Length: 302
Ligand code: RIB
Image (tube, rainbow, N blue to C red):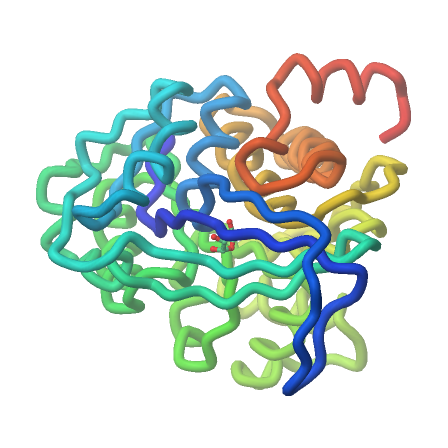
């Protein structure tokens, strides 16, 4: 079982030739809406990877909620832990340029009402993998990490977006997934020692006894456990839109752990899935199904 305690958004996406500068008004070449939110994206990725998945979170009582939950419903993610809050559904305003790069501004709305009380009915178990991100209150993340540890389950903390005050939570998770920018910022905040990123990752793993995974976009993924280091490649793709690629990686990774895959295999599948997620527009519409990941891996390009 995979449980995601996290955010649910509706993404409002404008395509632009280039990202705007301060004070600038640009014409968009296209506009779309799609279900998003780092938590919901990771839940959908875990479900599409073949995992039995449930989501704990909140949406508003408004017109955005049903579209935000539509893909999760279709994928049969258990939504009994998703509450209707007296706040607006979370919204992400996203610009995507011609190279597939993006900028995102999130209005958290109902995601800020996801509190420790929402965990009461969760009853985590020892065979459970619980995925977390930084788009809900940090106190809720802290309470979840403690509850999962007490149950003997496995926690995976995706450190996106960067929040300086979250640094103290990283050593509490069994697996930490950061992109390179986030890891470098947390390495400073945690005063990790080393001349380069890999040695700071080793320092984190050695000091905490946890596994740190750093995603490097087109350059794949590197990881350090207390015992060893690993590197897996990304697929060789030309990105159309990278929104949700990191979430796809996290969801697939969680599903791999829940299925009992060895770490290197879970990372390899997750990296391939993240690459495939760059080939279509939008976060959730772009998340590949397990058979697509199998096909890409069997072609031998990862
Ligand atoms: O990681 C991508 C997600 O970040 C988007 O779906 C958006 O909702 C923001 O939360």
